[in-house]
Length: 396
Image 1 (tube, one colour):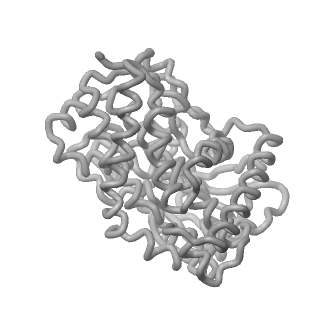
Image 2 (image 1 turned 60 degrees about the horizontal axis):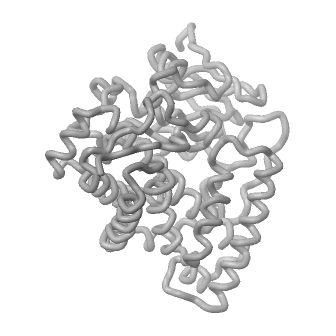
Image 3 (image 1 turned 180 degrees about the vertical axis):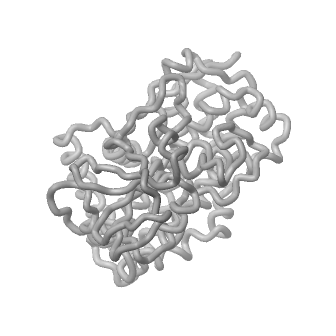
């Protein structure tokens, strides 16, 4: 066992000025010292920070580490169990009870069948941008509407209710909401989902939620599942589209390569997922004493798995801090790994593969409308990293 061990201070740590795409410098420095560091959770509880690709991947696949919310030893009070249906914060067998009915509805084949619909939604957004241009906030005009419409159509959220639902989810995820507003948004969302579940039971339509409502899941379970799918299906992809465009605009050689070689789009999407890693980290708690990287993680200790440093691990990727859309980026952890591998990974890929080339093709002169250092970024307190607004312009 190593005698010297690096220590990471309590998160969130800020990103360096002028480096909006790189992980916080303190985490990158921690990775230089080794793939695992000591860490103190914000509540003062001792823990560990895992920054290396192979160790993060191994823990994600290790049943000796738990995802259960009530076992997260990160604050000085006991956390409650996850509400029914919110399977991201559960272990087996509860996790499979909720995830298994969804797996067949999110297969790669079924997601590919959605490509034509994603193309139409994207074209409609670009038409509206062009009609109101030659400038726009790319977040509001492009990055948010596309995944919002897609996931709401999948779950059967009525069209006229999508804007208000998107606003509520954004309130949860932006990292800047006061406790009072957070509680209000959560209550409003729960009330809305209760109404939606009741409507699907009474009058089923052609959507995932109606199919689930025809099974043995309770109303509370359906509400939890719906919240997970809507939040994950909207916020992560929206931030990948906006932050991914920002990254390409700041790397004109990569932007030019994607425009001139559209066949690179699949590699470009995987590289952007690796390079940006908007879902920055997740927690796991050791159920028993486990040796990780030459150190014993004691039972009951919660570790932070740093996805964005794992995806920049120089032992896994050559020149990991370089954006290279020709890179073979397979094996990245942007969607996690193991039983909690993101259910919507294929859907997110399709949305990015369709939307990014369509945007760049429609607006060949697309560029930032403000200096890069004036682009408003989400705070590190947000669960999902990204930009709040992305002002762009183009030649009419």
